[in-house]
Figure (tube, rainbow, N blue to C red):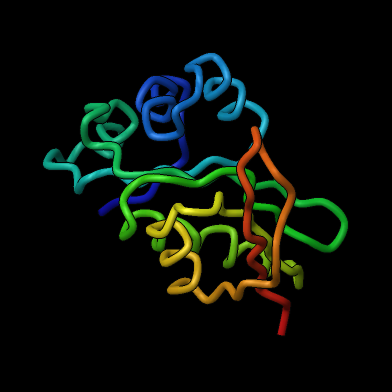
Length: 142
């Protein structure tokens, strides 16, 4: 698995993973830090991964920083990809001395499992989105 910055061409496969409109995901790529996990590239061209086949996209994470906290705004994909991608905001937060927080929609067990495997701890209920409950996960700076 290879992790890279998302590009606008990733909007369609991101939309499929997030079950969101492609236009919204295009905006996400422009407005947030977005990293994607793709299957290992077969080519040796350093620019090849930016044009990867959308079917090779395994997952994504988007995040931003406000005040003293890095907020994971969205993440998804395979459990293995999600777990690996959560390392990105954790690394950024560690370098900046910040906490990290994310929400998982109740019932999304693979994402909850990925969050816990990456070191996040459940800290109670989060807000409801479209009538669905969420669980708040957090990693406090050491």
